[in-house]
Image (cartoon, rainbow, N blue to C red):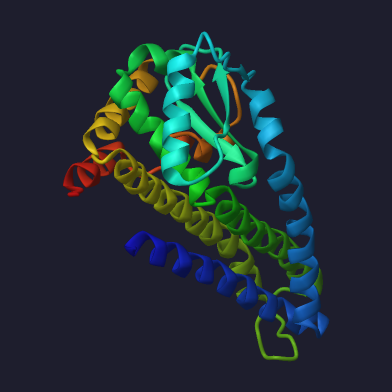
Length: 286
């Protein structure tokens, strides 16, 4: 419940930043509503396209192939059992042909969802631990996290676009002058630089919040937190040794553990620290 409230507050914060920067920019053009609407519309179109087709794009990006029901019978059995327990349709199941250990869920809603796991994670985890991972991914689907993160990305995208407009407007409008509402152009350009950074930080915080929720929901789905906690530790250790060999960091938030290891991925982490997730899972009592 705390993380649900946190997600809501973070989304409100993103919206507030959009309105504030729109208000400042509106002093130049005389109509802040129009400026915000244009920026929001462009971001919305971009993210709606992403929302409807991102599953196909990401499955192709990671060279996923459908999990054969005979070869991966155990995987099908687990996901069928968990999805039935969660009250959602059984998602399509895919395999990523890499020895890195990871998994993700995608799809615009529970009726059009997919779960993908790497070949490496199947070899790494016990059945109990793998079920914990799958329960986490099923929870992402049930909780409609793809939709929530798309909304966050839409607002953050609008902020970035309108901030870009504001920077150029401030430069060409005359640094040091004030608009009709009394706002300094220096104030505007500082806001235009800081707003996208703050929006990114909030967007990442939403992603981390949804991971905590999926951890808790997944643990409740299987009746305990320990299998997922152990799985997270194993996956994190394995990723340090063998990160995802290809792909794009823009998809990092989709995976159960951040799949790439570099300086930027650490600074702008889409996931909470594994140690903190494990601690919370071990505290869960049923």
